[in-house]
Amino acid sequence: MAHSTVMSSKGQLVIPIKLREELGLKPGVRVFFEKQGKGLRIEADAQRTLDALCGKYAGSRLEEMVAEERRKWESRLEAL
Image (cartoon, rainbow, N blue to C red; front, side, top):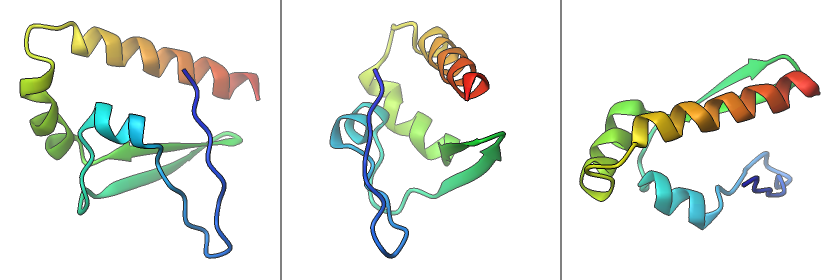
């Protein structure tokens, strides 16, 4: 599911709460930005994010789910 937000006059973006909760993103997590074609890839510090998810998604197909979401976003970016 795609989410959207509006950039402030200071260039700030708010990550929707549903995504923050699903990814276990807390204040202080470092976020990286990478330009990809006409799009922008945003990735949280992987280790802190994985630490936050370990208990929540124990026994799930988390790695497969993340890979599938990545493929979906990459195909969307290629379409731009």
